[in-house]
Length: 591
Image 1: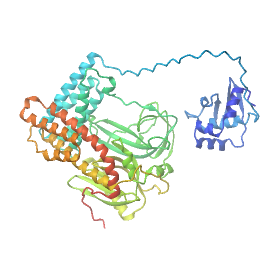
Image 2 (image 1 turned 90 degrees about the horizontal axis):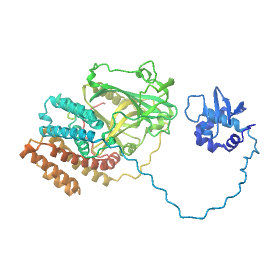
Image 3 (image 1 turned 90 degrees about the vertical axis):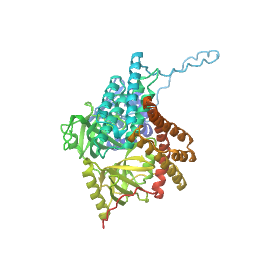
Image 4 (image 1 turned 180 degrees about the vertical axis):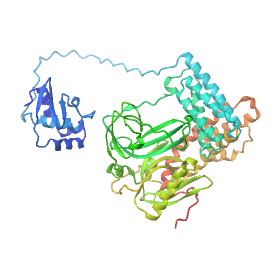
């Protein structure tokens, strides 16, 4: 019999609902099964009960959530729930908690007007010192002048030293503690190097967006008061994952491009209540280390004695894991405490698979890209487009909605494209159940998928249902599609300006501005007029520099991006539903 009355009262009040709230339904049922037919062997000391459950020792305290166990779990585990169930049997059924002794009532004070509590003052952001602010503003002005000069010359006239100059600007941004600016400038430098080397991987439209984003960010820092938060952080902040993290390896990819190269590993979080089912670990190194193109470095993390690549067939349980979004940390404090054979065809993988492709578009709301596991019901077509230099395959879900999977040709993606062609031929000839791990993003009103892994071993049973908030409307698709085409023309015009430079003769954009106005986008048309006027002004007043035109271009691109984000999801869902016109690709005859 429990002697401590407080502990006995807590045990008597513990029922299925309260214990499920402490842990979860599954742990409660497991604990009931483990303790069925057992009796409690315990000792009491200092208001707590010490009891053994299986091979573990539990200390049950009041409140019950403060109880502890010798197992590896950092939260309320099945052993604690089982211990409570066993100790509850030691509390008499007729137990009644002692009633509090009646106290002599004190005379009530006379009512008075309530004094309002002062509202807590909002936390003030940390401002930079005058010296640091001056250093940041000077760096901003120099960098904007440099970027304006790059826009004035254009990509076709940028010499080999332009990328090195941007790298030096990134070093100056680092010295001024401008983390976000340094990161953006290094990305621009890497992209400019690809342009100078005439690499197929270079994307002029992406460079234009990055250039405008960097200019807009720098302009926002040119002010008398700057906070530390506005400069960004050099290192991502990782948070402790509560309890044990069980990972199922589901994919791997070599990453080469930009300023880093290495390996990216993909995992499924076996906790189905987690906000994001997929997690990644990036083992990357700066590209200037000059690793062999055939062999990238592979490091051992989480206390493993072997490279992580060697564990990609094993299910792993991590203790003290750290996460930043979906990114796993390689912290030395994180340890793999157990591992076993990985089973890809598990219920968690089946339930994570997307069967309705409309869920892809909904999942990309307010995010640039996201990982998904998709079911492939059928293959509509595949082929390599010689003009866009990319391989494409169109897949359908079980309701006939289609999306495109694309891979841009580069020397490092040649093997990937050959593998995809083999997979497409297998799907076409053999059929079967296929599932793919993909990275989804939006491109001009369509969902575009980047493949990571394909599986032919995951059963079709299971899955989850998806119900869209509102049905697709073909009229919405038509309207959104027309607006996206006009906005795409405007974005292409900006990209051509970045390619040719401000000094080149500018094309006539009056018809494009007229289309913007007739479509109801008058504000966008006004920004476009200001941008093109600034570019024309530079041609006749070269001494003015290119900063003004750069900032006008950045303001216009910011508006373009916002408009695209609003229209993309409407257009993408309707394009899947009603099969809007897709990009023409060369189809192979596989018969």
